Length: 291
Image 1: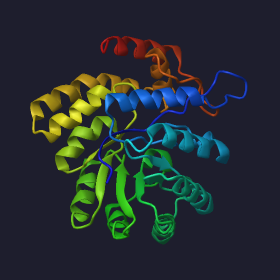
Image 2: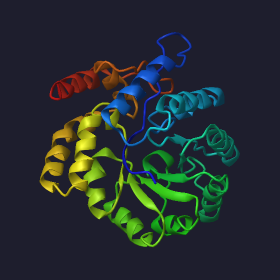
Image 3: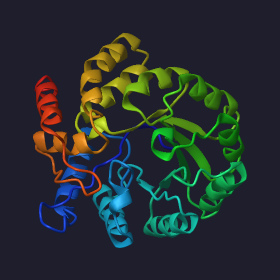
């Protein structure tokens, strides 16, 4: 259902005291990504600073994204929370606005047991919208083991997982254990896209695609067309930028990189702070290689 290069888009803010949403900039960024051929758009994820968006802002970002995309590609909206009732509210709102699916991070901080986590995801899936689970232990403090994923993959509305554990053995096991289900594994780590696709992943929900969508799309298409040599060349060519985009916590570097490339970015909201001088210098140096 969701495959290829799906940018996890940044949420541009204005440089004013309240850091209001820059909706014009958001539209411009999405339009550019669509023109360059991305396969989907993912608003309100970690890269979109969903944790600092209030409910009305969250819904406005999704509304504007859907309007700008206008059915050209799938929209998978982030609606996760560590509070199940809050995640349900966001999920139902996104569903009613017409998203193609939702991206739900595993509850962070709470560290739910197996029964609680399974029931959390099942409750979201029962909202009758396609659900992409999101496993990112570095942010949640808890891994989503393959056996739990396999159990959840049996739900007809749980269609995929965004895997960002960084554990290739685990990712392989998830793919192995869900092969008989109508279920996909999507990379949640740009630099793992090629290795994961070699095991059967279907694409990436990408930070780097905000900055270099053409290269990310070419990597994906090269692999799909069987040109592994070209795919490897692109993988190594973009790796320095991917490392630079994670020199500080995401989305601090990618918002600065967006501004350096002429896209709408703006500041990050507290508790994040803007990129340090070393990060800005690194991004400027690496980005010059893509001009």
